[in-house]
Length: 148
Image 1: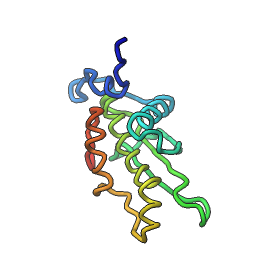
Image 2: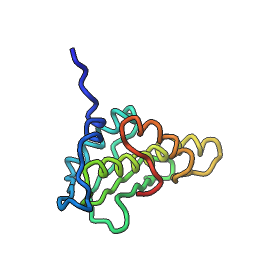
Image 3: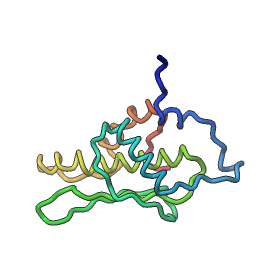
């Protein structure tokens, strides 16, 4: 029996049209966002991330952003929000931007509580805990950079 290729790897290897020469932009729906969030969480983050509030909005100057917040003073790291812009030159860039924001969610939900317990400051940035995901994401064809 032939093993099926991972859907993320298959997408990232698909032929793309340059946004400089192409006229069609990929406009993700909220259904697309949920689908790719679930795929990335399953295959890359091993299901470790909780379901955040997901949103598509028109953004200027960014492909997306992550925000984490608390509800109540005794509950830490329980809410997160990922917003991605409404147009991308390619579907691959959409997945790259989503993976980038999910790394920030990982910093918030998984790394954050450990740092607080150790008496350290919370770091949701592009430092070492962000860049440690570079090799893992590269195995799926997803480059991880500080900015796009």
